[in-house]
Image (cartoon, rainbow, N blue to C red; front, side):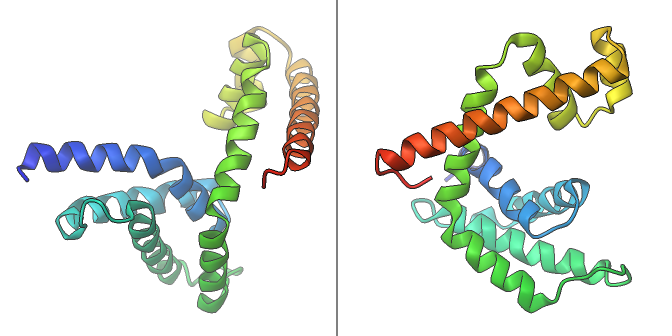
Length: 179
């Protein structure tokens, strides 16, 4: 395979698995910023070693293994922190997540479906807060509302999303699906 095909294959596979990989790393860390850093390092390692990956095999499993080792490496660098999970705990969480991969993805899709049902202004506020990491004050300035109003809107949105997800999960369970 030539280098441009390698690049295209890597980007395609990574794009397909990136969200699940992020959820996997996030479940083993305590902060989103840490998960972002670890995932970035894992992507670099994956790219460097993509030649070792055999196309047609399970990229998701391979990428999770790379990410798992990056989590362990990150943990070694952060050993000075007060709260530090044991390596055995992280291994057990990784195994559990491996078993629950489809479940997490279905839950994420259910939440995404519920977010898509929100009106455009509420979608924007959710995206600013949870994807953009904006503060309540920054969102208030961007949408032309008071901080208190944004806080109340976010509270109502979270309640609405919780109800929507709960309803869809119950509906899917009654249809015999595993969510």
